[in-house]
Length: 226
Image (cartoon, rainbow, N blue to C red; front, top):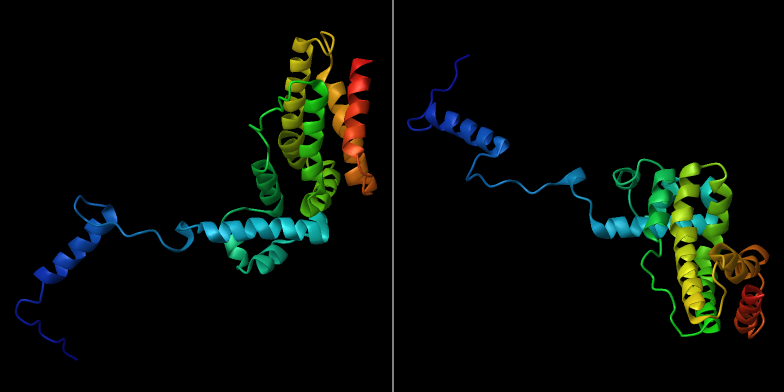
């Protein structure tokens, strides 16, 4: 069997030129256009957002223990590979997402009075805890935090540390105005202000009566001044 003879102008030099061009493209030689990344190199933001939303929905629906990558992918309308490209496991996924929702940078209320500041803090906390997803997800993650230090650390950074910072600023401002004595304890203030609200909305899960936040603010301020 014979090989076809090369046509004039199409042999040797053109083949080697094509090979050289391919090598130059692969090596990123100057003047050679680079191909846009494709496949796994591209993480579409709309897909990432769909997965994030699916995680919170899945957590609220089945809880962390029963949550699976398969369920998240199905709810997001993507394949499991799309999830694993972004997170290696459901633990790393949840830790990353909860950390992203930290309220770092939220300004402390500045109403000019301790009662006004406490009432404003309660309004923000109540709004967050009443969210249907948060009311389901937070208690479940607190249980899981006892078994997973990563979740415990993330919840502390996302929930406790920002609240401590806000309350510390409120207490400091009240001390400067003479409403609280020097040395007033911000941690005690946090317990008195947010503790009852968390118990009512997250643990007991009963709808508070009207004027509940007003009454709670007055009680917290009285306790802080005692």
